[in-house]
Each structure stands twice: as structure tokens, then as C-alpha cells.
Image (cartoon, helix red, strand yellow):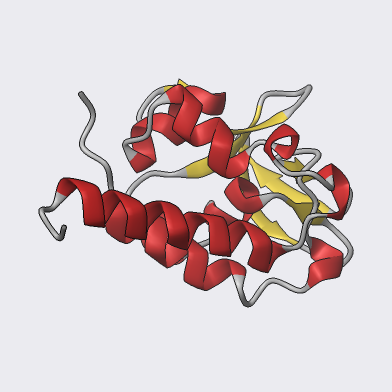
Length: 140
């Protein structure tokens, strides 16, 4: 069983509340028009680019120091962490199961898909952390 990284999830929720809605889009990790890549790694998102929660997570300095980043493989931009890519990287970095990762971050888990706002994802993450803490850490 993976160890859930509650602090990482909480930091991501906090960070998402600062992302302007026009730069948030659940349909892809990051829309790379106007983005800068160096040796396959995304260095920054320039004005006009959009990203989902995981795309923005890769821009949190603390997460980058831990090795979580976006990787451009020539055809797609995907999350990367310690040799893993895509959803496996997300699961490993946050300590989530596949179903938990999809529930928190997949566009198909939200009723509006492309119209979902960053604070809505942040609220879901906060609820997940609170529920996990309540049930698993003996606060009942």
C-alpha cells in the first residue's frame, strides 16, 4: 500500500486557488502552445498556455525539487516522477491509488469536464484530505 502524501495534496489545493480560470483546463496535462521545453522537460508556461491540476502541480517549486515535472516526449506532454510517466507518476508522487488519482484529477470525474474551475478541483482535494484524515488517523 502506498503512503498517501497529504501535505503534497494540500499544497496543490492551495496553489490551484491562485491559478486564473482562463489558464485552467482539465482536457490535457498542459496545452503546450507557447511553452518552453529543454531536453524534454517543460521549463515554464508562457502567457496563453493552459494546464490541468497536474500540469500546474509540476510548476510548484517544492514539487519540482522532489522530481515531479512535465516531460515532452515529442508527441505529448506528460507528468514524470522518478522514472514513471502519466497517471503512474501522479499516483507515485501523491501516494494515490489509480481510482483516487482519477477521482481527483481526471476530467471525466467532473460534471463540467472542460468548464471545471481550479477552485472546484482544490475543494475536492481538500475534502479528500479531510475525509482521509478523519477516517484513517483516528479522529472519529
